[in-house]
Amino acid sequence: PKRRVRYGREIRLSPTITVTYRDAGHIIGSAFLQIDYREGRRKKRVIFSGDLGNHQVPLTPPPAPPSKADYLFVESTYGDRLHRSYRESLQEFRRVVTETLTRGGSVVIPSFAIERTQQLLCILGQMSREGKLPEDSLVFLDSPMGVRATKVYRKYREYLSPPCREREDPFIFPQLRFSTTTAASKRINSIPEKVVIIAGSGMCTGGRILHHLKHRIWNPKNSLIFVGYQAQGTLGRQIVDGASSIEIYGERVVVRAQVSTINGFSAHADQRELIQWISEAEGVQKLFIVHGERDKEEIFRKAVMGELGLKAHIVREGEIIRL
Image (cartoon, rainbow, N blue to C red; front, side, top):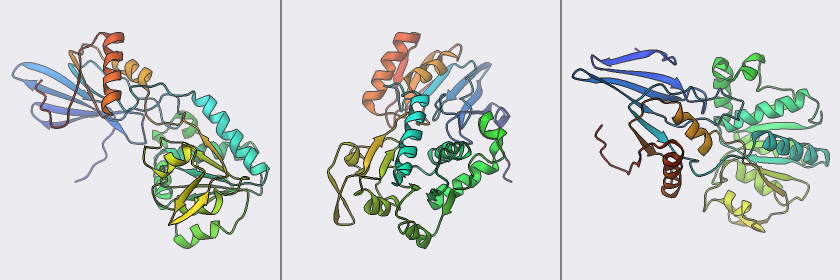
């Protein structure tokens, strides 16, 4: 039978192996794994980090510290960089939204449905409560998956950070509208001004965001805000790199909207936070680096060895590790 697994509760998989989930602070319900096992009379512990959260982002608590471990496998998604200050990013986001709506424009935000969208709803909800959103403006979450994910976040509020837990409903405010059907999505385009539209995909590679770009990116009164990484080769990256026009559904559309890239909202820990997390684990004999682009892994390996003096090995695909 299925059962709910709680953080910090030891689960016995066999007479010699137990596993414990601990909060990774990445997205709601994310965890890193602590595996304890015996080889004869010897006890050993391996920790797998999975994705670790950004301490600055206030939606979820920061990652729990790792305990004493013999071996540590750690992600390196942003092992080569430091994030921009969340406070600075928040101020810029609020400024762009307020200025755009005040001049009668609209704001289009490509966003991932899980975590980033809920983070934006918290920010916009606070702006609404402070009177920073015009009363005649509307915010549309035009993403069926985003709406479903938001319901999960609302249901399990106890796993959010204290500021979010203390509010009765941090994601809901008067100007917010959920859009789930295709017909409802199309109706948004009949509202010419003063709307904020959050839609996927986050890199503009497909989904409802393409329709909203087609209808609004040509208007200089509007703003397009990127709040996540735009990979090389994606439509989002083309826009970020300054394309004067883009192709949507076989039609060229001129880019005249104000384009802002705000990078401080990442849900991933940066290099400094990853190294700090590793430093809290006592007794580590060897560190294994996973989940990162090759060049970033190498930069991270050198940083870890230089700051912590740990032996660090970059794991290759298909490699067998013997502990």
